[in-house]
Length: 286
Image (cartoon, rainbow, N blue to C red):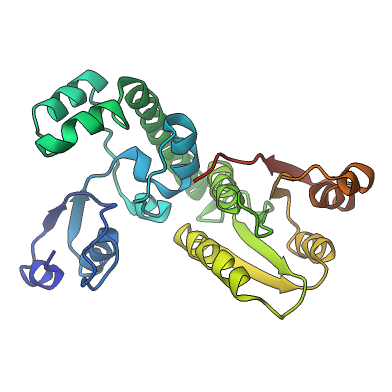
């Protein structure tokens, strides 16, 4: 997309398809939504389209429902920027018929599409997911608007704060996504925290943490990295921020030490008595 030419036209409205699309390698931006942000910054309104399975915070849920890991995603903050969200509720069989007629994919991709991701069973659960997501967006926006009218713009649920803990495990991305969705529905601020035992990080640890930083920032949250004893630092951070809810991944091991002395999660729970804690189970493989 020639964004400079679009802006130069000074239109009032631009239609941009496939919001979650990944751009060609030689593009100025990796993702199409970044071009949309440029257009919006120029004062031009944008209408765009996207499928529910591309929403970043739903990535794990979509995998659980369809057994397909969607690779192209866009951050939820883009959806939150929208002044209006319209649900296009197309019945599954109508969409499958469009695919059969070659209106969605090239002929050599039709059979694969109909018998994999676009099976009727998958489309039914995705349709329900889209309906729920739209309803949640409407309810959240309505409650925030009502609160602003009553309280002159004060932050909703000001005394609440969520701490999302990650420990470089396989399920950490899922913990961040579920934590964000939980915070979004409760309308409370949230922060992601991880603790390094010391400052001497190995290359594989940096490789593991980098995508978690990107994911956290794409969801418009702070990513806090601390050093020291993990349990002590998380407990201290929760108390300092006066966290009311802590989200953490469940233990993925069942060793004799954990059975006798408790897991990392167990020890956190013991030290933060009175704090609500949400434990995220281990998701399926990517």
